[in-house]
Structure formats: C-alpha cells, structure tokens
Image (cartoon, rainbow, N blue to C red; front, side, top):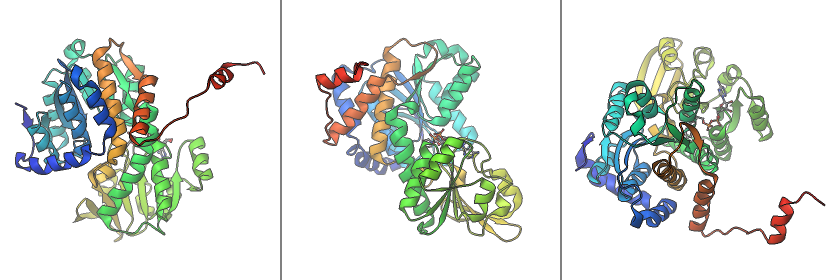
Length: 414
Ligand SMILES: NC(=O)c1ccc[n+]([C@@H]2O[C@H](COP(=O)([O-])OP(=O)(O)OC[C@H]3O[C@@H](n4cnc5c(N)ncnc54)[C@H](O)[C@@H]3O)[C@@H](O)[C@H]2O)c1
C-alpha cells in the first residue's frame, strides 16, 4: 500500500484520465517498458524522485513501478504539482508527497519524506535531493548507488559541488544528453512557455515586443516561437557568442536596461539571479507582462518588485499585478516560477517522452553499474538509442553508411 501526503485523494479518477491521455503519446517510454518488463530490472530498487508532478512525470513513475521499483516522489516546484495527478499516482502504488502551492518548508519536508524510504537511486530536478542528502544525511551516502539530474540549473549546482570536492555520489547529467537539451530545452520550452503565457493572459502576441533574457537552449526556442507568433524579439545576453548568434538569427540584441523601456512581454531563461530587478522595473511601460522559465524563481527579483510597488492585486489566476507608486501596472505570471509549468502543463508530451526515456535509462545505468562519485555524461550509445527509438516510433528511417563511406570517413590519405 503506497504512503502519501496529497491534497485530495478523491481527485484520483480525474488524474488517471490525464495520465491515460498522456501515455498514448509516449511511444519511446512504452517501447522501453515493453523491452524491460519481463526482466523486472528495478526489482529491489527504491527510487526517490523529485520532479514536476504532472501527467508526463506520472507515466515515468508508473513505468518504474511496473519495472519492479519502489518509488517515492515529491514535487519539484510548488506550482507545477497537479493535485489530481498526485492522487492518481498514490492510487497507482507510488508513494507521493506534494500539493500544489506547498511552502518552501513543506517542500523540504517532502524531500525528507522521500529520503525516509532509504532510496538507492535518486532522480532529481534542480539537485535539491542530492544537496539535502549531502547536507543532512551524509551517513546514508554509502547506501545510495547514485542519481540522475534533469535540468541545467541542477547540473550547474552539481558541478559546483564537484569542484568544491563535496560531491560524494555519482550523478548522470541527463540534461547534457543531445536527446535532452536539443529537444526538451529548445522545442519543449519554446512551445510550452507560450502556452503558459497565452492561456494565462488571453492576449495576442503578434505585434508585441518580446524580450528574451538568455539565448541558451531554452531562450533560442522561446525566441523562435515568439517570432513565429508575429512578435518583435529582443534578446539580452552576457555571452558575446550567444549575442551574435541571436543577432544573426534576426533578433535585436541590447542590454536589459534598454530592453526594459521597449518590451511588452519579458521572459527570463538564464539560470541566473536578478536578471530583472530594481534597475529595470522603473523603466518599464504600463501593462507589461513578466514571466520566468529558468529553474529557480530568482531571475525576476520579487522582493525588489514588492518594495517598489504600492500594492499587489491578484487579478486573474496566475497573474499578480504590482501597482507601482506612479500608477503603472506590472504583471508577474505564476509568481515568477517556471511559467510553462506554473501556468500550463509543462513541455509537450512527445518531448518529455524523450527526456523521460533518458531518465529511465540513466536510472537503470545507475542501478546496474558501480560508478565513481562525480558528474557523468549519459553514455553516448544510450543517447543515440533513445533518439533512434523515437524516430522508429515516428516511422522515420536513417541512412546507413556504406563500407566505402565508413572507410572514407576514417582515412586521411587522398
Ligand atoms: N522551463 C523549463 O521547462 C525548463 C526546461 C529546461 C531548462 N530550464 C531551465 O532554464 C534555464 C536555462 O537553461 P538553458 O538550458 O537554456 O541554459 P543555457 O546555459 O544553455 O543558457 C543560459 C543563457 O543565459 C545567459 N545568461 C546568464 N546570465 C544572464 C543575464 N544576467 N542576462 C542575460 N543572459 C544571461 C547565458 O549566457 C546563457 O547563454 C536553467 O535554469 C534551466 O534549468 C527550464
């Protein structure tokens, strides 16, 4: 019998329908489940997962249980947890600890709840579980085989831990696989951020000036889709190469202090702190929309915004209007948390099918191999196999090199 702390277990049938809808569009995960089902490769494994608890994640967690694992899961963000999905997961045999709108204290209590299951494998999204193990439960480290990490900001933290000599666990950086960042970060974020902005505001994007902070994998996707929707796009960057890339992709590039004056919609995707803060709020036009899609809610400085405002109106679901002392109204979406998850359902299903296929393979690798502490890449053959299975599911074939071509590519003579 699964243990759970969820908001309302009676919502399970609604959550189960969401999961059933999602599962039909996850051919790659289905393929892996069928491939491994007979062998039950996770028998004996206890997996602690901290992920965005919505329907696509539910499909991964249920697959892991069907492959033999005991799974304990908590939500990785207060506004990305869907209560009905959590209820369905609890009914489906997953141990679940989360509710939408949880406080930061409740969030860390839930992280501890999943660690109480004494996991031997961790699936993390933002590195909080791995960091908590190191800070609060170092004595459990020898019993943990390792972890896998989903996102850029989590990998950045883990690499910082590694550089400090603090990382005592092996962690596979799922984020750095081609099958992850080329698709999830770029096309997944690109589409779902606009889904979040549009369903929350009901506003037209065409003709507006959209400021995209950060032209990394996520920012590129968001900028491209903004242009497709008819927006004028302005990019802000710290990195000269990324700035030049944005320019050559056809976008304006300028510092945030200039962009603040012209933007109608601001989206941050940097993984950095205070990208929009007290330097910028006074320069903005009345009625601007601001959203963040970076992992942590520190990119738009909420304390600065609050300090500079006269009062805040909660005007619409997921929209807080900060009324400034001069009367301008600056709108923040989803409390500055991941806008595509707080204000929509996160990445499209088919995109997460790829990312979660990698997560499954990474967790299996961690469970079946003895790895050394440190941040590890996804094995290249796994990365390729996941993409091949995706193409096969879409009915798309690849050319195979001829003998002559293979020899030519290896030769150095004329
Ligand atoms: N919303 C989602 O669903 C989702 C999905 C994947 C990743 N993420 C998160 O999005 C963030 C970005 O991820 P990524 O993969 O694009 O990272 P990335 O490293 O590819 O890109 C980040 C870019 O931001 C730039 N940057 C940093 N500080 C800046 C600043 N002050 N002003 C302007 N530009 C700045 C960097 O130069 C870099 O080009 C991370 O926090 C990641 O965890 C979110």
